[in-house]
Amino acid sequence: MIKDRLNERTLTPQEVRTILKADNKEIVDLCRKAAIRPRKNAKGHTYFSYDEVKNLRKIQAKVKDAVSTAVGVPANVGGGSIQGNSAAVRSILTSLQDLETRLSNKIASVIDEKLEGMDDVVVELIRCKTDNETLKQKIVDLNKEVYQLKNELSSYKSVGLGFYKKKEVYVWE
Image 1 (tube, rainbow, N blue to C red):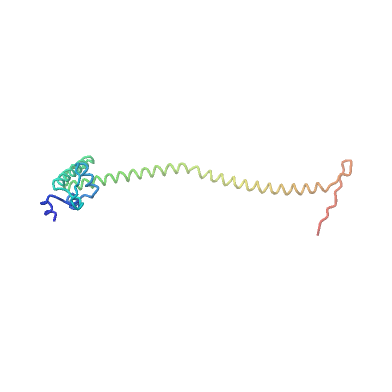
Image 2 (cartoon, rainbow, N blue to C red; image 1 turned 45 degrees about the horizontal axis):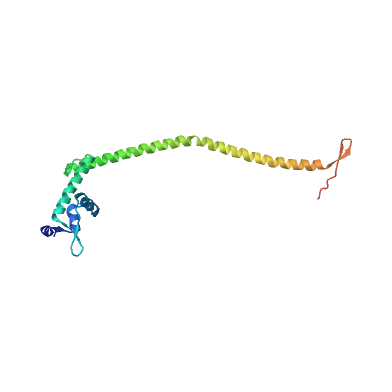
């Protein structure tokens, strides 16, 4: 079917995707770079001419060569290039994993340093809390003693010349 369409010199977007082995986004980018505007037929369907597709294919090859040159991978698409790509990818992945490991270790050591003194602080806080509870109980006991002493003091009545007589306290039985 594609060969028949090539003779007519017009191709549908689906055929262009098949020929270029690209998705719509990549085709739109290639059209923009090649300054090609797809046309529409009388039914409103988009189509490309054979020459436009040839130009798109040339632009696609140039873009792939530019990308592979920028990455440092050979431009040929033979079997050695694929192995070179996978070796480069493996090298990059290994570098990223090493970087991640180093960062994780550094962050862990910083956190450990910061938390190292926290144990002493926690122990001190627990000791202070225990001391506070002990002092609160002592205050309660002293308040009871003050109350009892005031009651006993109020049971004495002055009789003169610095003498005091204890009032009788009635105990209800």
